[in-house]
Amino acid sequence: MSKCGRKKYIRTNLRQMTMETIESHQDGRVTDSMAEGGSAHMQTQTGQNSIPTLAQVATIAETDESAESEGVIDSHKRREILSRRPSYRKILNELSSDVHGVVPKIEEEKSEEEGTPPNIATMAVPTSIYQTSTGQYIAIAQGGAIQISNPGSDGVQGLQALTMTNSGAPPPGATLVQYAAQSADGTQQFFVPGSQVVVQAATGDMPTYQIPAPTTGLPQGVVMAASPGSLHSPQQLAEEATRKRELRLMKNREAAKECRRRKKEYVKCLESRVAVLEVQNKKLIEELETLRDICSPKAD
DNA sequence: GGCTCTCCGCGTCAAAGCAA
DNA sequence: TTGCTTTGACGCGGAGAGCC
Image 1 (cartoon, chains in turn red, yellow, blue):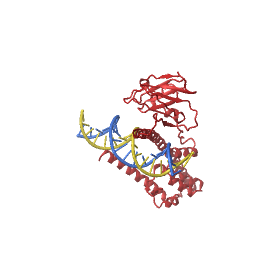
Image 2 (cartoon, chains in turn purple, blue, orange):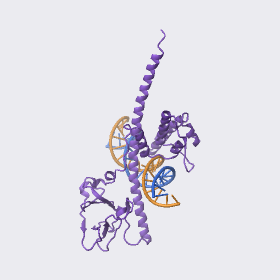
Image 3 (cartoon, helix red, strand yellow):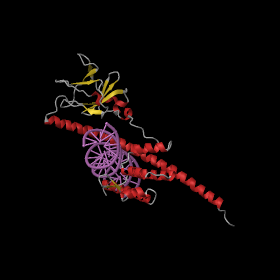
Image 4 (cartoon, rainbow, N blue to C red):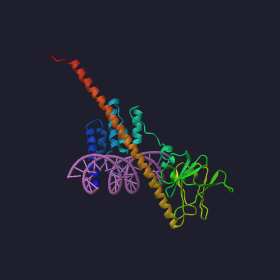
């Protein structure tokens, strides 16, 4: 069996286990909501049968539990929950609001910490971080110092000197950045926050990029800076499409990492929850046995 | 040492979810 | 409706353990 074959086998088993969990719930209190879908498979909006996810199972379990404790269930709400794809963050945060102290809350975006390239994280806290089309990171500190790091290098090794000029008559609030392009084609593009997108290049051997202070009301977020000049030629359009794709892939790469981290945290929380409930269950069984002994003494 | 198995993380794609 | 985010699924490669 190949690697992928084995993985698929494991996944299939996981799905099977999940299905069994769902089916066991069909005998219980959530049967009405499950019956709406017609089967244990979730009915998606596109009409496809999809396998319920771990999170959905957890949601069902959570709903089941709350039904037991509160006795009142909004079936419509449950159907709504079951029909949606879950968000680990949301589920975990909801759990944490229900069970304080047991389930740690997933923190919102730690942008300062997680969004910072590893090579820059150990240096002075920058106010802006840009990425060039070649993967280099450019950090602009509050003092105006600019640092460039290569993604492959470690720490300060990737730093490159950068020349800043304020000569001439720059527009108010603008800082002129001169960066000697070292790529083969001599082109450099920056990814800059949306509120700071104005990039201007001078013709000649040394391209000049202008990054004014954020004065616009544009939403924050990393936006790829368009190369100077018009984008009307097919080649430029193709380059723009390529840049957009690279940006999308980069974002999705980071999103996937974050999603996996959340999923791991979510699974850990579920495991700890299981442990707590098992202990509770054991205690209740012992209590029940004790009460039985008291209420029905042996007739000797 | 080489081989196989198993686990893990990553990058990518596609589709669902969601907010404006 | 649209654009962005989130997440399941897939394939790949690396690492560690066990076996020969």
